[in-house]
Length: 395
Image (tube, rainbow, N blue to C red):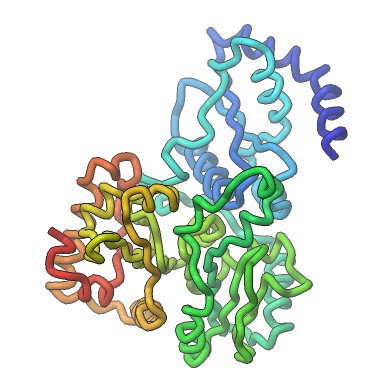
């Protein structure tokens, strides 16, 4: 496969190199830039491709962007799906490649994303009318798969993505790279089981998602589908299920971006780091607990943001302990989120004040700069979770 890719680069260089030189020559009159969307991780691939298409369609620039991505990708079906958008110019990838190889091509390279870690700071997803519809035959295929598990038309279903170490350990670089720096983001699926059982008692189907997971769910509940351990796993269902679910429950992992761009409600549990809270969507978030190793005292929100880390080692070096939500907290938050999707009554005054204070701190802390922008009207922090915090948490 690698030899084939090298061969294709060389063969396509015969037409791409002259075109690149021509594009550079006409720059004073017509400015063209190449933008390669990251495609090796599903979250970035989905988020960045949709975000950049919206930008291209809505913004007036003094240059023209050619959008492309490198293949093979993290999801074959998404590559096929997103190519349907006319704003994607996949043929231009060879232009992008050879422009980088030929010296002095930097002026024709546009950044692959405009904000850190793929974030919608100005609410483009909510404002956009981009058509991300599936074909009729694809919807039939998706619903037929659900029906094969016992699903009936009109029943709600929830996608659950609980991150563990198995996915990155299965990465082709796992043997030569230490992915344990991500461990602080992992959680135990068994802690979620009472909440998932509660959902099924409400008539909801629960689909545990993921390509490679560490352990299967130990349950006999027929309305809980442990998708990663099924033989019929495929790249189409990976996308379609997240895009069509009634709610996506996630610990904050790449695939939840699929539900995000399709504007599905989101519930983030055991989320870290605090500055990364998804504020631009219809979402509810509960953070992991951070406490000082010496005293056991929980960090305030300001301290959590100030001393946060993107690695497990970073928390260890600061003597900060990272603790998961309890099974009871998870169940309470799932009930709260699911019921709030049906009960649209206004938040109590005291709870609203705490929510406002949370967002105020989050947006004002220097360490959050570049991570927070627009706050979606339906974005909130778990109400019961916030009520149970100490008096000084929001100081």
